[in-house]
Image (cartoon, rainbow, N blue to C red; front, side, top):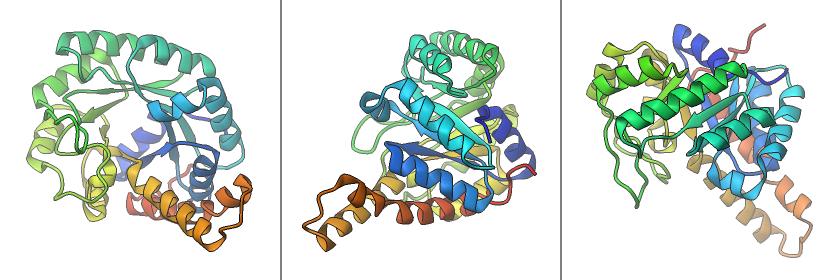
Length: 281
């Protein structure tokens, strides 16, 4: 199947009570494993290229990789640019063939965040792609503190930017290695009472799986970003392979061993969020 825009997988999720994971990609082995997992689960999937990935591999190369993987399966795949901090980078991603861009203006003053995000949304829509924005600020484990999303600001942001999804801050934190106590459900309810747009949770690895499943089924959260959880699977598999085969030196032989555990973990995430069996027939 060819690549599809973000809205094409999130709107059905919103209407039918499930979520689609945004899986953070760092290289060929993990993105291929995630795509195989989606095919095995008959599920839509969002492949995400964040700043670290883009620093390692140029945007046009990533776009071609995502496009090739999408063409190899029968399920909808979104090529998503995650955490872009400039309009120019969003333009470059759209030109390269990404079908979704996330403009992160969360560190900007509210009015400037709205202005720039609206510009990116208009560019994305003109290209037949989707746009995600962020209101509030999702912090980082052992780093910057979060600033919770104000529900009234979220409503204004969604209306004035015309984005297809809004990332919110309700206790979620990037780069958490363990599950936290959970999300601020009162703040989520207040946001949902004022908006109808699909909501996104960054730092989904820190959210307990049972809460992810419940919110996917019962809330407006239609996308959980998962990165750290899967990077830990990759790291454990890589260390085990090297320990079991200390004389192995061919990178392809080594990295091939990481794919089966990643497929298993990604399939579990897809099932947990209710995305399995949701690919269009």
